[in-house]
Length: 286
Image (cartoon, rainbow, N blue to C red):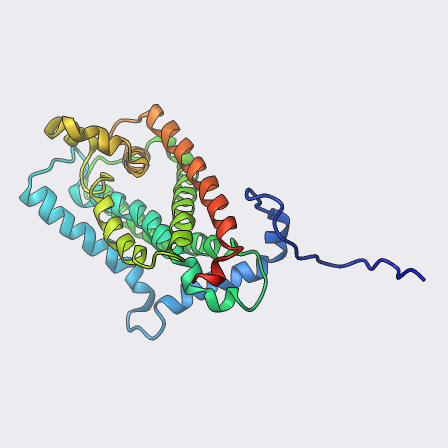
């Protein structure tokens, strides 16, 4: 007698392809995604005195230090844009990418206990980090807008460019780039733990090659032989274009945004392939 075939509600099986990004399954686990987002936001500054105010303190203090060192001491000019506002724009945009990269680069190691006990789409974990960082980015962007309005009020001629309507696309590009690099590094950390410490140092070094505190024109003027190194950094183009959108400062480079978009998409899919491949066996090596 044949046993009737049962209709399963859900079926968990190995991925058929390394390019798998099952949006339908991710949507089914959307409540878990939101829970992880809430966890990332709430627990980060839990039991701290200032709490979410750290979201504001860090970019403000960094911008003040950059203004004192790069603009007042080193004499770097920012055109008609107040140096503090120039630096705050760069720091605010950079912080979103940095937080996405650093937090996702340790995904497997930090969550090995959860991954080893229950099934859910593993990519939800790094995705939740990118989404939760959007909240922090929104808070820091609000502070930037507040200082922007202040400088306008006291008579500075600053205004956004009409290209500002495409700013959400730029944020999406940053998120893809940070997520892709983070997934690549997190997969490598399962075997090489030293990368965790190298990422912290490398990100700080990368900031100085990303035009956070100075314009591209300064590099081309002072050290033209090394300008190509900065131009190869997609985040340098992101910072330049973001200042163009927010402050109508710097030159818009169409080739730069095309290059950055292509690199971000490629890095994201490469990261997804490596991440999907690693999740099948990482529990044996972590």
